[in-house]
Image (tube, rainbow, N blue to C red; front, side):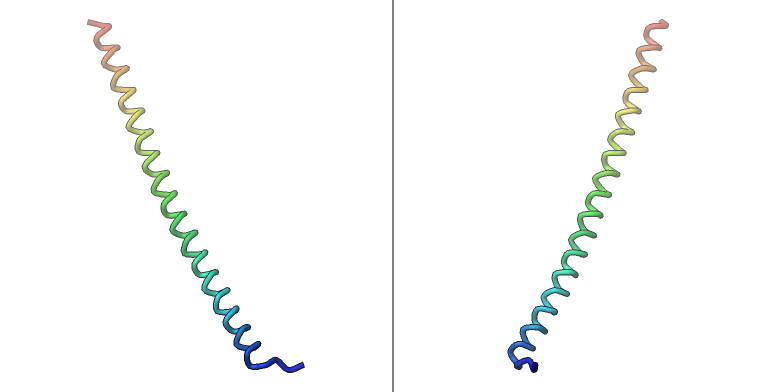
Length: 67
């Protein structure tokens, strides 16, 4: 059975919309992944700073206890 011109146009439009949505989904995922990576890096930095601060406090209290 032969499709009408309107049906063919709908098919082409639906295909274009599908491709556009796929492209947008990929772009959104990449953006979210990038943002999460930055958050993880920031958290790692904060944890490292906390460890450094804790080590400094421990060293200071040990030094003052020995005086």
